[in-house]
Length: 119
Image (cartoon, rainbow, N blue to C red; front, side, top):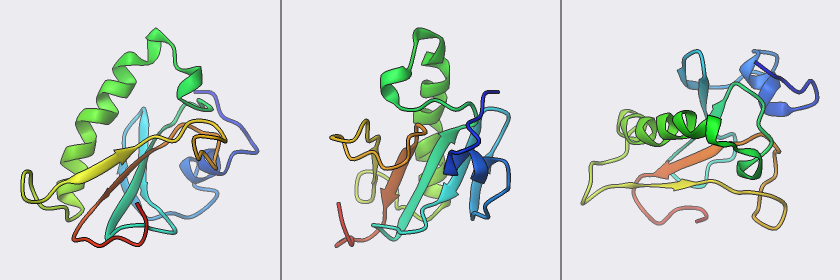
């Protein structure tokens, strides 16, 4: 796995920075956002350092599919109500103009009763 020693998410994955873990396997790490916008707000990140969606290749298709199919399961486990009355939002910011603040690909999963703080 590639890692960036200056990346805050790589440090979280490696356990150098504490987090409230939601999920972990060989490829992915999930943890609660430290500044949540919604009652449920966590992120899924690949353990392999990928700066953003702009750097994805066809080789990453299975990884992204895994993230997108895991997000609903974890959303429900973390307290989101089921579809259609409940639900959640999945957001991937890409690049500075896209609102990406940490340049390690991450997928926000947000849900819970509205109104939310932001979003």
